[in-house]
Image 1: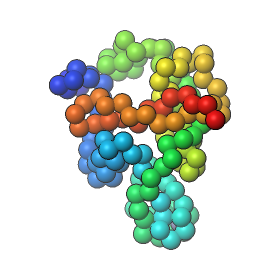
Image 2: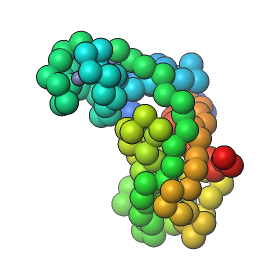
Image 3: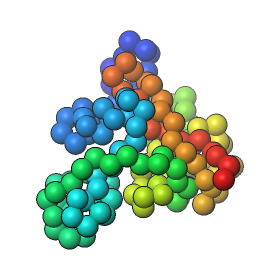
Image 4: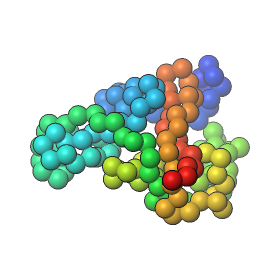
Length: 141
Ligand SMILES: [Zn+2]
């Protein structure tokens, strides 16, 4: 664990390979996922080949950033010292409109307030000068 200049002490993603590209878009305020150029299937986590059609051709396509809560769990005991002051916390799986799912959190929402199917939209949490993490907030549709 290292402390950034901003004082953010939680673990950060390693910026290499697909992860470097994914977080570079987040830094620009864009949520992008891989989309197959052959069959159009979206995918996440990033990988070289399309699981739907076997194509190696893909692009980083921009997501609407809108989705809904697919599921979550409540963590009451921190399993990493950096999260000691953050419990209870609720890691949430968000299903985006494009069909891909992302592990994140819904800001400003207690675990008791979460509901399956709750509409959410992406916001970017600038935790260091290099990294903005995609988080979500409740939205009305
Ligand atoms: Zn495909």
